[in-house]
Image (cartoon, protein in one colour):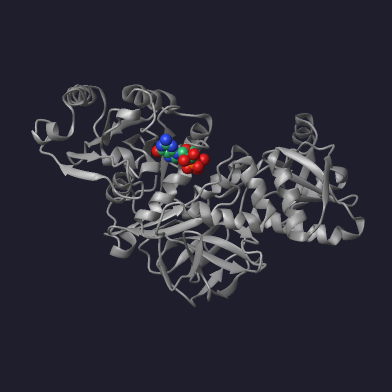
Length: 533
Ligand code: GDP
């Protein structure tokens, strides 16, 4: 972690920002929770709209139908909304394990994460994978244990599972009273409040009753004797056995506060949101090769962490999602596009309010803005007010699966090239052009991505394509002194290709290939990751 001591207080507009993602296993309730966030954030009138809008989008594109069919979310987006005095930026993470690279990059743009688990299922495989990515970045994590209106596991058992499975301390922020049919609500440990669930109205916030500790006679008016006794017993045990909430430890990623609730009943959601506001991290220092960029620095800087093409089929544009690292951005600003060294007037940036886009007149460090462009902006690119910065930590991974690709109609090869390059820029796939022969080799991290690509190329470019086996199984970027690299390329032409950035790649069949290179060409380095810049 970068040293944050002795820093001046952030400008209030920056200090009120919370930029985070939700991680979960499919079906735990991420979509429902997101809807309720937007509902309480005033971004939508009635919960259900996120889905409704999603549905409308899907009918416009069969690619989205694929997404629905597989029950995964292939496209990520960012949503901004206000809650109490805070501005929340929620960055959606693609849910499926096949999209780990995309997810990884999304998590480079946030300062915190909410981990949603199903109270009956506990920590599931995908939760654990995403958690590990958060841990790599020391992200503070808030936990929401959902579906308490159903038969769930014992509260201690759930907490225990998180502690032992994920090796993180868990501090209860609330404690459930009953479960399933008998689920009444929660005792808010951090504020000594009783929160009662209203089953009748799923879009309303539950009743909140201020309590003076566990001996307050008010408790007995709302909680039946038997449940009250159990609550007192459990809380006593919890205080003895579990760590108390400690903000520093949470911010460092060693401890996660847990809230219990039911997203579908809007229960526990506001407490979770308040928790994010009260305890969640302010926009953090972002790492660049040159130095750490502090959010309060006056010049505007930001980096592209995601590019999405054809978001709106009516406009064939691309939107680059930029995390602002510092400063106060105003629409119309001229920023330096560091990679091309060219100025770029940002005249039509967008903020994402639920599924609608809205023109962003201004934005602050911590915000995510979308910049429509025609392909100039790529993942990893920096935008600044003049400084030649290079943000780090946005890796590109060597693909684990390679296939050749051909257009169904051989006359359409140029078309195919264009489509492939676009997906390469989006980061949806790696595209390699071999030095010898025609055609392309596409590399992905998960097999499902081939299906997604084929269906997108067909839909967005009206181009049926065929993927076919390739003799190669993996790819490595080639680094080293120029002369050594040239000598190496000369004798390995059959294995050499260029990626979409024009960088040299060595296509391999077996680990044996790689070992041979390191023996025969000691000066040449083959790497499995490349920093995007
Ligand atoms: P996602 O895959 O994580 O986005 O999960 P969804 O939000 O789509 O929820 C999965 C299913 O669980 C849906 O059928 C929801 O209606 C249901 N669900 C979500 N939250 C709750 C809850 O609090 N209680 C119950 N009983 N069901 C819920």
